[in-house]
Image 1 (cartoon, helix red, strand yellow):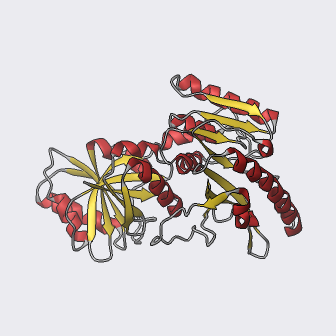
Image 2 (image 1 turned 60 degrees about the vertical axis):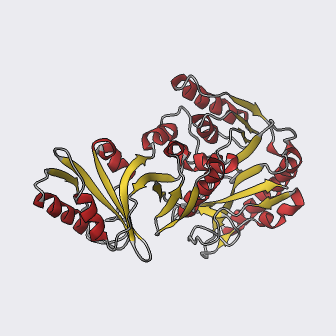
Image 3 (image 1 turned 90 degrees about the vertical axis):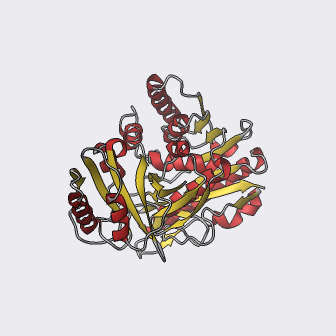
Length: 393
């Protein structure tokens, strides 16, 4: 049986997460069109670990010559009573005419049906290519209906039904319902934090260490995955706020693993728990103002460069060979349109680290940089998260 994994907002990040978890959980990952990856030997139970995958589709064994042939295969299935369905198209054929074709075929068979419609005639993933995970879940297509998905390949088409959608309600709760958020000390999105934990641990049962923990967003995702964690921050208020957030989580999930917190300077880190991995959103500098000049931004960059150098010297001495460190570096959009990036990435050997290529050769994405890092940012966001994966030599 084969499955397809639908990428989230950042395809390179999605593939990196799949590859990292595939190493431990023994499933293989290969391209399937523009918006998805093909999974072989995949255990559906692993899907609940994902942070950057939105849907999992169980594929039909057959290949098809066209999108229309995929619709005929769906309409030819054996249905009981009324069928509820929607069509998601991951290719050049819009979902709206395919939905109309499915209705035509079902009507010819006198099969009662209700459908979830798309309303725009353009092709592509957005806005007329797919039903979102939120739509699929809210409309109960997983349990009592079909989200029939069509994938366009170079020479043929694949099709199948959605069997899993990400827990958007859980991620939203950890984002908005926790007692404390702080824009100055980081607003790491829960799905990115979850993905960073997976990239650092590769699905293994490890202790997650976050030396710049802020209010504990990454620690919450480690706990949601059943992993113990250790968080530290130089700011005592951040530790108090992280403690409140973790206590809130523990009240709702009494079996959640423990998280240790301490006020500490990340540059003086000297010991780590056995069998641990580091995942952290590094210091991004003060909150950027629209009036900040490029000179102010470059001054901030120099300060952060010095901080990260001291941090990597400390972790390079504390981590064991083969241990991973997943770190987001800040990069800044300057007023002239260029992006200023930290050059500490060119000195990793000095600290005893080597880069881990996040995406295997053969994949190409706009968010994958020439530095073997992944840019994570919205279009107009001035500060970019440049995600780096390294391992101790």
